[in-house]
Length: 159
Image (cartoon, rainbow, N blue to C red; front, side):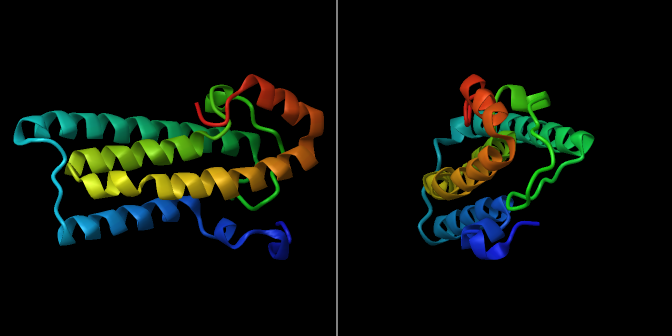
């Protein structure tokens, strides 16, 4: 495991928890200041779209986690990976776990037809984009060097 003194505080918080806490803050705001998402006519569409996004995010997360497990490397963001994983969903995005969190978040917000959680979604995404991913990328460059650089040139950070 990495030396925790070098790890930004936010890295010690599991990324899913950042999304869950933000979502619940949005739900709380919705109860204080309700702002409906769309009209009654759109509820069925929002529900179906929400379910589709949740399923897509879940499948992506399971695929990414399975790829990590098959390669026998860590899922923990602040741990040092033992291998560079470039197969499975990592062929299309360098961060399928974070993409899956966004998809599930969007899906639940759409299913519940709540605007506040959607308005707060940029908060965990920016935290991941500006703090977590740069830390992980620095670690990957240190561990895998040119091999990781080539991977970064081929595959986008998000999508």
